[in-house]
Every structure is written in C-alpha cells, then in structure tokens.
Image (cartoon, protein in one colour):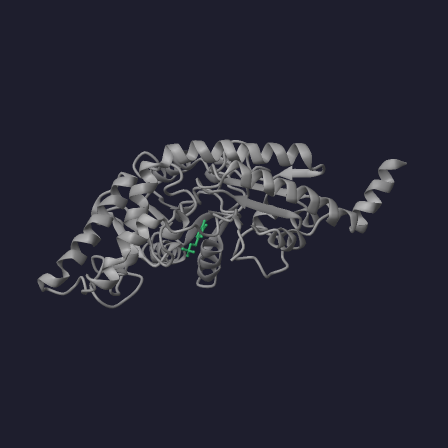
Length: 394
Ligand SMILES: *Cc1c(COP(=O)(O)O)cnc(C)c1O
C-alpha cells in the first residue's frame, strides 16, 4: 500500500496497538459467554467490569450508569427514542440543534412522524448555540434537550455546562452526543449537568462497532434492544467482550494522554490553519477560531468543488473529507455548513482535515503544499473564478 497521510480522524481513528493486544485473548483464550455461571467465563465478567469502571471514572460517573452499545448511532437512537417514550405523559417537545449528527437528526424526524414536536436551534456563524435561543425554546411540555458536545464537521464546542444548567433548572433531561469529544476533551457528567451521554470507541483509537450510553441513575428509560438480561436488563444481546475490552483500554490510554495530546494537536492544527489561511487566497475557516476540537480544521475554498479537491488529494495519498462521512456520495451540501450561513456554492468547496496525536509537522507541510497546487489548478479550470478575476481587474 502506498504511504497515506491520514487526516480524517473525525470519521474514524487507527486502533492503538495496545488496544488490539488487550482484545486478542478475548477472541482466542477467553471466549466464554459472560452470562454463564462456570468459572471459565470469569475472566470475561471481570474484563467487562473493569472496562465499565474505566469508562465511568473517565466521566465522573458510577459503574452502573454505563451501558455498552454497538456505537454512537445506537446510543443516540436509544437516548432520544427511549426518553421520548418514557416521558410522553409529561410532554412531547424536544429541543435539539440544526447541526447535530444524522444519528440525532434522523431520529428526530422519526419522532416527528410519531407526534413529537422538535425545535431545531439555530447556530451563529461559528456554529455555537445561543443560550438565549435555548431559553426561549423551552416550554412546559419540553422533556428533553439534546445538544452535541462538539460538532463532527466544523469542530465547534458547545457551551455544554450552561446548557446543562438551564436544562436542570427547568427539570428537563439533558443528553449530549459526545462522540467527537469523549477522550478528546475533559468531561464530567456532574459538573456539566449531563443526564445521558453517547460515545463511540472508534473515534478515540478503540475498535469499531462498540460504544456506550451513560444514563444517570434514576432516569426511567426503557430498554432499547429487547431480549436477555444483559446490561442490567436495558440492552439485550451477548456482550461484545473483545470490543468492550478494547474500548476500555482506549479510554485508559486516551484519558491518561488527553492533556498532552490536546496540546500537541492544537499546536499542529493552528499551524495548519495559519499556513492555509496565509497561503491560499479566498479561503474561509469554518467553525470557531479557538473554541473548537483540538484536531479539527475545516476550510471553504471559493470557486472550487469539494469533491474534486478530495479526489485530487487522494491521488497524492492524502485522506480528507468534504464534510462528514455520512454525506459523502450525496450532492447536497452539508447541513452544518448551511446552518452557519454559508451559501450553497461556498459550502460545496469545503474540506475537513482532522488530525491525530500521531500527525507530524512534515505531513501537514506536505499536505498544505499539495493543497496549494490543487486549489490553484482547480481554480484555473473554474469559469466562476475566471469571471471573478475579470471583474476585479476592471
Ligand atoms: C461518528 C459519530 C456518530 C456515529 O457513531 P458510530 O459509532 O459511527 O455509530 C454520532 N455522532 C457523532 C457526532 C459522530 O461523530
């Protein structure tokens, strides 16, 4: 395989070697079903308990508030649908934002078809939710507020603590999709007044297909997958033991290295943003300048198609994204970029580059050098750019 520069860590991350190593024995040696009574299954039970404790500690939660799922989408679906059903007698109004991941937005559409009313909060040009708008949206029948911790496309981090406070002052349950933030930003569920939180292993160097939902003790949520008594009868199905062990290991390492990695990524991200903004004209930085995920850079290049940009970067062995992995293949511009007010034609020319702690300055330099050439080439072929230059000459 040719050497790639992987700058799509918001889509998924490389599994750490230590994580793979921790998982392997649970495929080979310790393959028992954790629900079985014999001693052969004891290592599996213990490993599950240990992973649960690691995750709980990372959030300042209790072990019995962590429910393992098969990832972020399932956790989001569960949080919204089960809350909606459990609290329907109190009200059928839910507040979320226009820039959520589709795992939230499409679940909201599903609920709308079933008689729930959803308010989609707008965001400002940087992608931040306004606290005033949130306060105005609250009604006596509001049962749930769901606001993502950090956006997967533009990286903007939301004022989660204030949102949580407002939710709790009004007796409303607060859920956050923290899939991009968990193990990247420090999170404490009590400090932030979070009642439910979704996370996914493969976004922080764990395996794919395993995640969790934190559910604060006392919430009356029904089970989502019906069947056996696993996960305290709330999420049936034989546990993905190797996956959960891997997730636990990724949390252990990710939390220990969080501050270090954040610092390293922030420096490199700012270097990338600086070079691109200085060296490529007619470029816009999407998302908040500073209040953003340490690994996220998102640009809009005027007069260019994001898809062409991605294909040409790919020819140079560089993996980027034009928005989110979920919208790839569709011609609609990203709902997030439209929500921050970008006109269609500019939203189309967007590029998301997301770093990891393994990304090097050499990789960034090489990427920017390629990007400069590609943008120049594409603009040279663009009739829009030609018109623009002609007009400006007059
Ligand atoms: C990736 C992602 C999801 C979906 O997680 P999966 O584990 O892939 O199902 C949900 N929300 C956000 C913000 C994400 O970035």
